[in-house]
Image 1 (tube, rainbow, N blue to C red):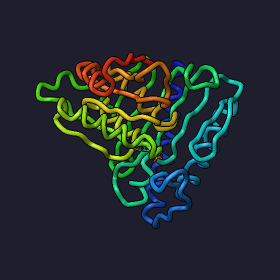
Image 2: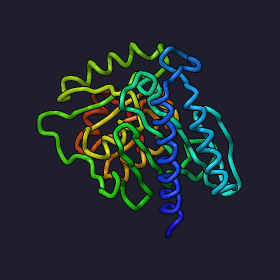
Image 3: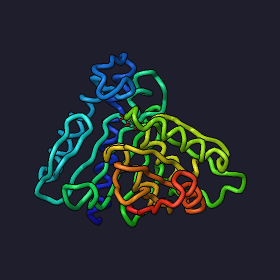
Length: 271
Ligand code: IPD
């Protein structure tokens, strides 16, 4: 087994366990513990508990690795591998009983700054859908045992997903961008969990997805799923890793979407 496959299998095991815990806690009833930056940016006790479980399991299995989690932060380790974790992605959906939420666990190597990361492996578990997505660099992306591939063409327009991000100052620009994208799209979705939007691009359930302001834990595992399913992942303008607009799309949809979002912008492929 190579390192990426070992990391992927560990990510799958722990994400399954974490997903089962999240699911159980939701059956028991969810209370919003706090609003962070805005009313949409919330945390529940389950987010914290699930992240603690993931962190403890990783520390027990691979004590030398670094950790970066949405709820508890973290830091680098000595092994060169860092785990990037969103314990419950789509927390608003989770709190409102909707099915689109996921546990996202990725393993990256490289420097502390996300701009230089290399995605090695990842898993996204969607407990309410009973789905387990996984990928390892160079070994493909899977839904359970089924190998995934992005869509090959969208003759009547692409099915595109987006998200609004948490910074209200960017919402007007996002609405303008949506206006630019609609004429070339079959339709638009905003399901509320970035990791699953990305998993759905990998699975061919969407042709493309774009969102600005995503954090590393929202996108790390999902970006690898898209890349390993044959899609393209990039950022508009020079900066990367969530600080600008991310696009993840099948090859046939990427350039048209980038042009509609920001005519003349240069796109930097990252994954
Ligand atoms: C959020 C979801 C949402 C996206 C936000 C994310 P969270 O993650 O992925 O779809 O629009 O940008 O922050 O906060 O629920 O883990």
